Length: 503
Image (spheres, rainbow, N blue to C red):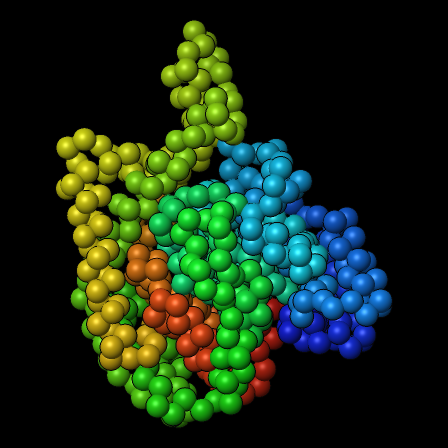
């Protein structure tokens, strides 16, 4: 492993600006790393080496000419395969979209290209973002670099594993119920779900439109702040896009690095701990709380009683929206087309054959649940009731933020489990998201950062939640805690990860 790929994105950017490294050198180092280890890890569905090197060479030329470039110009990035990318196969991890080459870019990809970050490729994911383990990808499972017998989280396991395996310094993920934060927790990386609407959803292949949110996947809090400011902001092509610019996150992270949290009220969410949480996860969480206290934070306990219903509400709202969004993949309008092997070729039979062949088991399961929840006679009993619970959860957040500036909890109740352990038990799989789902239902921002290793030697995540539009608060708290923890550990948590054997 070269020193280049160990550097944070902020460090790489500084060396690029100083002329100590070229973007071509950096990009090639990451492409070499992908070639060496991705056959094992399977973080990428597509690698775009030629395009990445072309962008890197352009950045080096412009920098040599004295051009005014974005601070992250020349720093490579990976993009989750649910984000539409012009000229590059985009599949959402599904056979339904295999071979589809989009004719346009998602807004956040436009921003990345305008800032001239070389795009290394598209990362693996659970099909249509439905999963917590990246075992539901049509292109093979992604492995956790800490232990290749364990899951890297989901649905964005490819992006998180790419960061943990040093295959990329930055990545894009999407978070519908924890799909940025939970992979971050189990791979020892940083994952941020911004305030809903603060980053454009235009060009994201939708699963649940009222819940989906793109965000940064990085190795440090500062890197997330830099990437968040780049990809955020108003987009007239997204009707849910917030009007204000997304700034102040880097400043907040810099403030956090001073490690003075005097006067900051930090609320421990009573309902996001206790029974069902692994002992090592709870221990690392409590140690992090004590570090916050030592930096001057006031620790209070808050209660959000409706959170206990969040999982049930989410698994009615999300499948209902998913069944509607995925209805267009019918063999006639979008995606794959499979004709029946026998009998007449009717619209109904083509649709059945296409959806049967194109969708995996988890996608089919959620479509069936969602269609049932929206059906006549059951809409009010299920979907309507779930929306009422959603309102109660939003009210709980409002009340909690009157008592605390930020809320905290473990990101996930356990560390990474072994492949296959929960495939036959969907409810056990869904429980991985019990601590992350409430923020998606309410639209509030959340961050996961590494809190140490559990007794099994696997990473533990620490979650920080802030009020809507107050993402800067979690960057300040996150940067402060990260600095205190790294001083305690003697370096980043990923420095303790086992070396991957290169092919």
